[in-house]
Length: 395
Figure 1 (cartoon, one colour):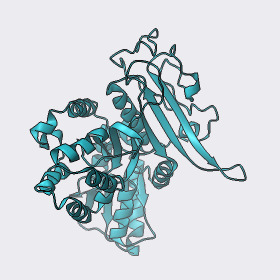
Figure 2 (cartoon, rainbow, N blue to C red):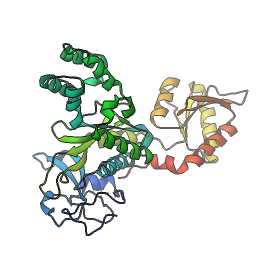
Figure 3 (cartoon, one colour):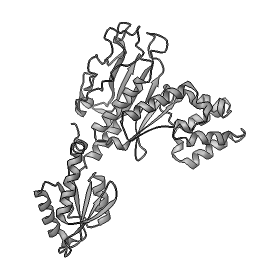
Figure 4 (cartoon, rainbow, N blue to C red):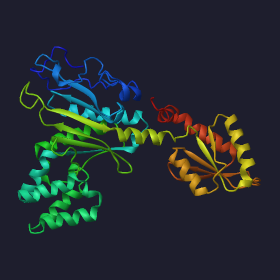
């Protein structure tokens, strides 16, 4: 942990032990009036206001807060959660905040494997467009506006718009396309990789990957969170469907204390809509291990008998006896994060074997009920602790 005697006026070059914040519950985040919203950094006070920060404040400074909009009847219409860490001028602050954001998203129902982190340096984008591609100030502003508006979500249209803006600049589009298609810093031209900002990003990407925090961590020239707010590192946490769940970055200076540039803060924000989306999704998640899909109404007695037999062996079974569209049943079970789907096609099965689908891999197995039971229990035994955590929502 940081030296408690270190003050804002004596910033340590390292963060020390990045002790994660501890989450009490989603209730605390949503409803606590104290302003701390259930977070603790394992030693230092977390401030909910800049007013109490002075030259004697221990560094780093951590701030957690929530902004709420109140309607005329005193009810909360919407809110957002915000966390900051500051007065430390290195990328360990980014690492801690990204870790915290992922921790929050996982505790409200996300699986870390479905979360991807995208990183860029906002300050470098304009300089690259001017110096590497050779654009003028107006062209740079127009392209940055396109990126800020997320126009790149429709790739063909975005590239056509970029081409129209830089058409008169020789070779500019080819250079822009290199930036557009880069998935790692190593995909960039050598003269860009030597810039100091990219060295810092490269190190941040490495420690995030070593931390095994999420599914994927990557560099993207198009990550431009916080238009007009962030001036340095920017990051977005995106799910596998392309939804931006959280964004943040290194802000412009808030304060005028401490050494030069040490008064920047790294922060992120999670909107209420993200929490609502996760809670809505996870309210539909079944705690079952396997879903039984039935071909026809005549197979219901057999399906219920098989379900009861598997339950007696410790398997958690979900049976759909209302919907007989196999495709709809399969999609429903996959959305509920079930690991297996067992297909029952008739009341009598002379072969004694059934189709078992492993949803995560798409593999099919032709197995007996005994073998299906054993396979499901083996799978849950290996991943029992992890699986259970996915289905627990803190309320």
